[in-house]
Amino acid sequence: MISPSALPRAVCVFGLFGSGVLAAFPLAAQDYPSRSVRLIAPSPAGGPSDFAARLLAPKLGEYLKQNIVVDNRQSVNGVIATELVAKAPPDGLTLGIGNNGTHVINTGLYKQLPYDPIRDFVAVSQLISNGSALVGHIRFAPKTMKELVAYAKANPGKINVGVAGANGAVGTEVFKAAMGIVLNNVPYKGSAPAEVAVISGEVELVQLSVPVVAPHYKSGRLKVYGIISSKRSPLMPDVQTFSEQGIAGYETSGNWHGVFVPAKTPDRIVRILHREIVRVFDAPEIKEIVSHRGSELIVNTPAQFAAQLSRDVPRFRKIMLDAGIVPQ
Image: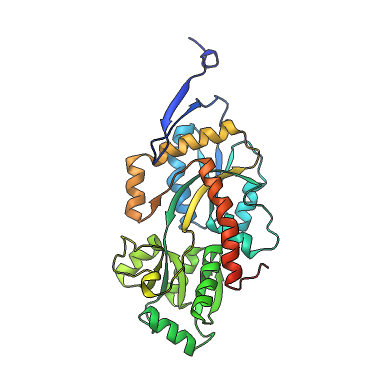
């Protein structure tokens, strides 16, 4: 029998997901990965980043022939989880789910982050994106966005709004600045606890991802004031966007989630990971799950992902400064 190490190097050609571009990469060397791979998610179980991690992990583990262990590290704005990825050995055995909160918005929230979102990581690929919605407790009096703004102006500082993650923090502050209202921020360590808080009435308002909101909206457990994206969601087609309600320019970069590895991870490993991520999200069953959830597939190349980060970081710093958000 011929040893695998004696076989000539082969080339695997695959189509980049969502495009007609073809790229050739050498087959994975037999030594990677040599053991289980840790995938750190900056959210508790049930959160959007956790969904992305658990969507990816089983198939990626199958293709890499190693277990992918999802490690949920809940913290305010995902800082702890993201720092763990940044400081891990660059051997491809620690991956991280990052999002536009951890890698874009946090740069405008903190004067000194324990990581640099561009310098300390290699962006492997984005995965999915979800729109957001402003939702309210079902017994909260205002029924429409117009009524909500009027009520808030008549009751400054008396409305509690749950704030989960960097995206929620910035979205809330931009909304308050745009509407000229005062809300009482109540911080949570993730979207899942914030979801429970608004359903139970612990807070009156919160911004959550559309896939999380839709089932509660349909069952009558939450009211939805508007969709924070450029177009309506197919999961709630009757709910208007913010722009349709006259709130122009109020859009974030979307709740995207992607895979990062520590800086200095060998390019060979990055290419292997990207290739297998493309395979995972090109599977019909994965596409169906994503579509059913109302999310959008946005798998892209490391270069495309890195270029987007380079554009978004300074753009959102300006948006946040314009809204009066001062880094702490």
